[in-house]
View 1 (cartoon, rainbow, N blue to C red):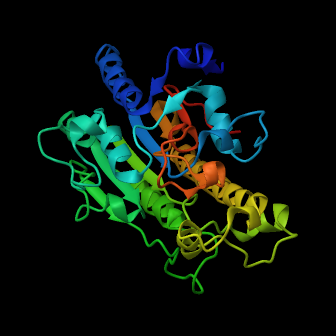
View 2 (cartoon, rainbow, N blue to C red):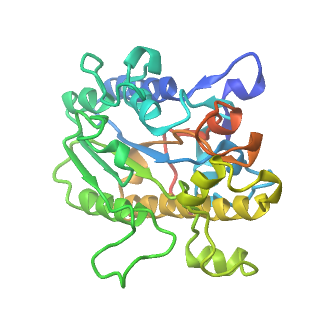
View 3 (spheres, rainbow, N blue to C red):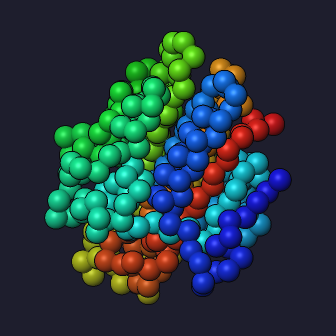
Length: 328
């Protein structure tokens, strides 16, 4: 059954604050497990599709078909269609994911990048409850030496943002570390001993600049564009400096390249769930999929996720599934 969060029915009167729902879902899960008559507590998987804006995941909308894996998960769980990120960039949003507090309360922002002590994190709470905890990512803002956002995880591993993996023939087009994060997570899952539950966090950075879709998407959707076409970080900087007048930019091209990266992040989501299904871990797992912020793609005369708190940056996808049914 596909259920929609209450905020979707009363848009404009109610809204869903993603991090609070994440923390609430986890604590509800733990409380239900305690009343489960001896059943083992469920596993918890939190997946951040970094930089994916909400309207690029809408089922049945103009972007239908970009995220089939997320759509299947949404059909088995609860979709919150009026969910909002607490900030338009990585650090404060992830700090809210892991603490349940607004940025004004947890104090992790552009002036203080490191998560201050005193606010217990989700990983610390679940580790204390007997969970094995691990985080896999390539986003440099999540590294312990940068922000301490992953405080409390038993194990963390940062993948290369360039997409390089052992055995790759040089740079792999369209990958920003997502393949590494997915592979590292799969290796960790396969090596899990015993019956203790696990909390797995994975950040897929694919939709972040540069917009450089993988070859499979290009062959199916972008054959009219040069094979090496991409939107680079340098171009974004030049645009903000006024070197590329907005009226002269092909925004449809920019949006199509970004769409390819959103599709790439979705395919990685599917790969991770295939691993869980292969290991027969999917039937006792709470799944939470969201994004830390969106992206301006010419909206309001802006690109990337700076200089703005418009809906294009704060409206994010949020799907929570308490009893996941594996993909067909």
